[in-house]
Image: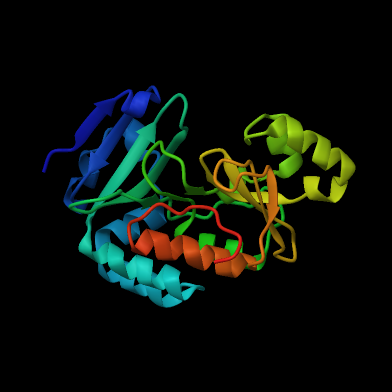
Length: 236
């Protein structure tokens, strides 16, 4: 099979390469080949057996189910060197209908301390996205930011109201954003206490979740396994 090349993918600038068969990896140009990671290539070459192994190692039941479900999709290795989306490679999974989620395969070094469940998930898949260039991502460990940073950089909805809240309750500013969707962020402290900030889905700019972080992430992977978009919720 020929490698598909796309210029300015999703308006991100630069170029992307899409490899459908491991046999074509050697055909990648040097620019793309230099971005490959050993783990991504290993998973790609051995899929779907590699996915079953990852599922068995998953720290959450729903994550295991999601990884098992990917065996029914067409696996494509995606390499991109873009202006606005970085330079990386990842594995994307195409179903006949619905979204085409992907993961980076490499965890990366955590920029900030975060709960163990987050690092255990990333150890299996690395960064996860719902669809290329779209919202709904489990944030990469090397891109983690505190709520204070998200507010300062205006990356969260209702950042002006949240700036006042963080000034009144400084401890909230140290919460770490681990998931983003439509300008809303799931932020957590070291103990796994979680808040949703932004207000797109829950109405208020800051809502404390009654669920622990592991339960919230179980819901995220349940949605992925069902090929549906994960929406913020505090009580289910």
